[in-house]
Length: 406
Image (cartoon, rainbow, N blue to C red; front, side):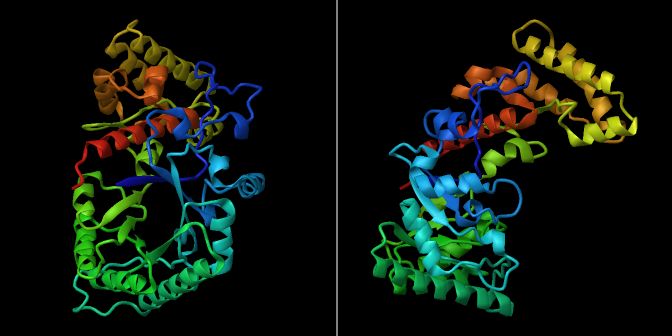
């Protein structure tokens, strides 16, 4: 079972100064910052997935490439751009989430073929048009007309894509994209892709599905799947179900969820083998938009906020070195929280007490926790938050190694 990490240009600076919260004046991001596969060992994934929409800068939200980054990616190719070791493989896709509202995908087969080939991907997924909808018993309900049309578009583009790879002698492995809205329609897509000649198929549009719904689709696919056809789950990370998925032909998956939970989840920020903890929120006075608004409105004194912020960081570091007690650090956190949150919002103090009492970073074998200690558990700025995300990837990698695929 291979795990691919989808790229959104997530790097950290090895020289970042946590005490003063500042970068080295000599830092050059593209030269000095490092990816997860450079920051931790063992490498926490088997490869990376890169979307054309991300590289082209057409994706929605953060993570898209700037013009200089895009230029450098095309010039260097995927392996050199990411400084990938030989054991890491690469797979490209079009990023269907980013054009979900369009009538048709915005890409032509030839330009996608050029993207995969020119940049040196090991595998490339055909252009697809995502379907968001699920009907468990398809015989009882008619699918939306748009769903049927999107499935047909995906299949037509997959056929054209495969023909083009053979015509041009592409060096990458072509992967067919299957879309559906239930077990029978996914099985139909897989059957059609196999007839075209695909032996590796990526199942898209399953992110909103529950694990038992994914399994229902996989069981239906079993009825038509050739024994040598391998399945890839796009955007799915269900470690507890991976052994079951593997029994139905799933050999790889990709997901950013473990990484993103480090700073996007309200509670489960710091992962361990047995669960997750809430990271300790110490927002930067000069970098937190909500806190800046409170200061500008006069609701919070800037001087008071800076004093409370510094008191929290000092107390946390002293706690980690054994110089003060749990009660003292919780008092400092309570004082800052009352300024930041106000009386009407929920308190995190009970969650902070749990993570501080257990101090999971002390027992963690990952290089980042060993090097940075309690800084990994502090929810504050991109350098700490992304490092915690990298830590979470090491936990996922260890969980995957503990599974039995037979």
